[in-house]
Image (tube, rainbow, N blue to C red):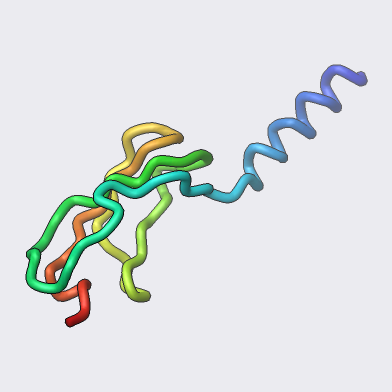
Length: 79
């Protein structure tokens, strides 16, 4: 049926949606500031979304499809 086909197409679109970042908090840090929690706001986050810092995956906590947090190490911020 057309309604079922439309629902399947919408679900496939949601499954393929890439995470989008609209803001970071804090939005900057300096070397020597120490470890911190980074809050990422955006869209299409899932429980499996991970944050990478300088190519290294960091412990990431999922809150909603628009908000995740990651533990950033002091060593992630270069001198």
